[in-house]
Length: 246
Ligand code: GLP
Image 1 (cartoon, helix red, strand yellow):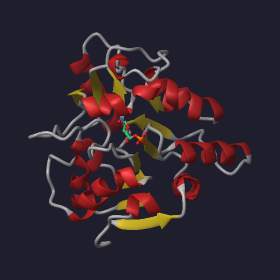
Image 2 (cartoon, protein in one colour):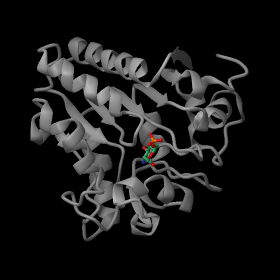
Image 3 (cartoon, helix red, strand yellow):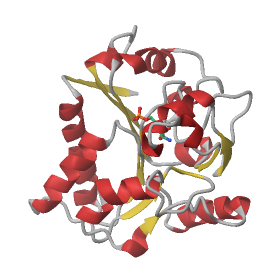
């Protein structure tokens, strides 16, 4: 794992946006895996700025988002789709036909997961997968458990995760859906490159365990140790408990 530590969340966001811009410069039709949450906001703000300044052209880029809540449709203000529209899609020249999202309102959610996995494969796979990390070590919505799913699947969200996502639902954890759809661990690990971002001391313990702890389904991010091309972009807080950097 390559570890880069930045002064603050803005510096980190700029660096990740540059990493994405370089990928798109090298390959204008790059397949990007995108994440939601608070952590990527600075990255998306910088990508909007770069696009407005003519520095990045998204016209051929293909995107797949990691996950989505079940039981709400794309127009719901709490949906990750809506988040992405507000933070990125509506402000850059992505071709809507190249934007891929899990449909949490599908009548057959299992079939929806199969459709998504096939759609990713049909593009040749994800070139660069962006990840945040949950306070319990989840990536996407792969929650700590006795077992993890390899492919895109339905997940029962932990209470902690529902609390962490409450801001999207008027601050009320009970309004956060109990279920979600998420790329699986295998889907994520098949990406050619992974960039995981984390900010704040609240994530420091998880980051230390993900980098230097055992590989365990109890901390899904620890599986990233098995991938050949993972970069961690951390601020000082998130890096504050690292005992070794490898
Ligand atoms: C949600 C998303 C994850 C994200 C996590 C962390 O649970 N499904 O993909 O990494 O939130 O969010 P934040 O960046 O706000 O800490």
